[in-house]
Figure: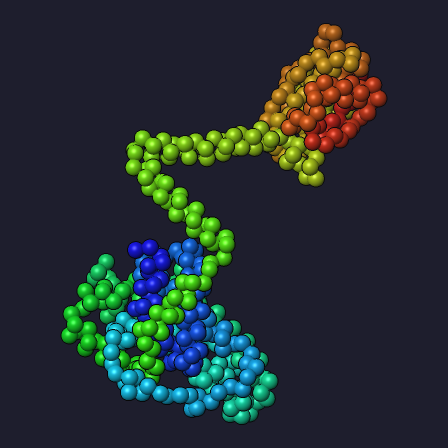
Length: 181
Length: 275
């Protein structure tokens, strides 16, 4: 199986894993997660010649780390539009959401749990001043609310979030031994 | 290998594996491997236990139809890769195809391997030998200068060198103290009446001070204006004739030391007066 086929296989088999990570670990909206998945796979597709991994598992891990970094970059970007409250999100399709279909498989569940563990470990390793702002940002809390909760200025939270997520990305990549592709 | 992987995955399920270890183990595993390693019932049991311990709740996911996923995929693959990537990929495919058919013939396979070895080895040997040949005093000296100096001495009764300024008699074997600033070859010439009479030493010297006891005496036809010169050989950038000219020029002008870059960095000579 060549790299193109492997990428396609990863896309089809693990689409819901990516979706779950985006939703659970980065609290992204549905459309944003879809965009992130698309962006991730475009990056991989464009640079497929540079992928050293030759196995399904290798390419999957590479895709996961690219996806992780894409999500973090998205969170670090300054928002020019008012942030949406996560409670306002459309929770439509709930009937289908609850159906346990082939979206979840044992491996995807393990990968999702381990991703969460990885995230928690990375947050723990952050310098104390960044820890809470980053954690709350990843949980989807708005900058304004974080500022209110921590009793800090909104601009301070923006800076802490920006630098903190940068550090967080670095730590995540160090903790994941497969970053070398 | 299977047992090792199985143990690693079990460690993840039981919570013994660290985050890094878990990531490492999961990087080798596919869904099929997981099915092969654990019977369905045991896998479900382990997984449930693992989920409970980690308080796992699946996030509410939107339903994305097969058609929508297909559309996203089409968008992904329709994105053109950068030009250089396309060229690289094309070349890779062509070359892979070429070698795949080419290498079926053993003779060509080994011939090709031998050619590659020769193509790599020969220039390496050549460069190495060139490097060795360049390893003279000169280029190794600081500031690109060949730095060496020469003193005369007479070999005393116990083979020790006497004072350099002591007058030399015809019978005394000459010795030369050379101070080399870098390793390399050193040549000594005796010049008599403006002509190079004899090369009396040609040695490879390491960095430091060396006493060259060459056993050369000035008996016979040597007299006034006999010069002994240190000539440190170096990668030639000046023709041999040019070198000779330089030497003779020095003799005529009675220069006691000179520095010439690249070729002869330093020449120090003294006029010998024989009793």
